Image (cartoon, rainbow, N blue to C red; front, side):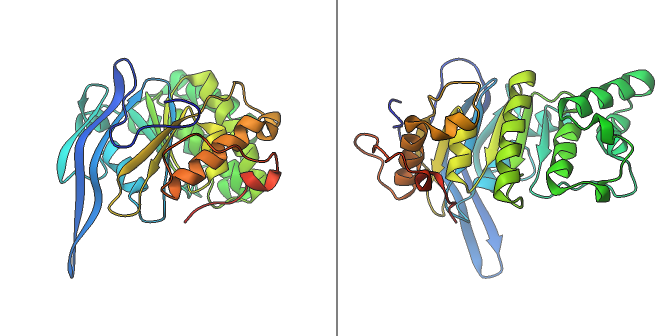
Length: 288
């Protein structure tokens, strides 16, 4: 895939994938019949990648994420995670999940929320406390360990949710629009925080978003999906340098890639990547 372009249909990367999806269809039974949510999905995600899923509302992005996490089962096809069925990967705790809402327990302190998966796993004593402190330091909330969720801002609560998801050292982090409810400035700060955490932990991240600029800023690759039934229509390699920062958002290549994703969402996937005018407005907006 070159110059912001990609190939429709199957998405493959070189090497042994940490997530492999082959021939997946998903149909939901509803009161008045059946809803085809996903159709003919073939995806490989490599270890250490940051991959974003983007598409119109209702296209099946979150459903695809839930298939990877074994929160729902495919109607047809195969999902493997770390070389084993998704269900086995879930039972082995190979992944953590972060949703749009932080889903923190109000009666637990920040540290108590981060410790929760370790408590469930039976980790006790110094190791549990060490890991919780390490995660709070990673998300730069160690000074708030004794606070309660209600005492934190929305962005801080999401950082606690990320720390909790990483507490048991999962190989994969699944994130379903985790910053969708945040204001734009907080969202941009959280994007930078997430990249910092990803670069330190090397965790594979699969990230659902409606925001084109967010997908481009964060990702190694952006997977573009069609309207329902969701199909993969394009895969765009994001060849921006790392580490990424506020200057990245001012680069001409950033604007070009934002335009490439937008054009793919409009169904224009052939030809060369359009060259965007270096105008900040080109990088604004969401879909859906």
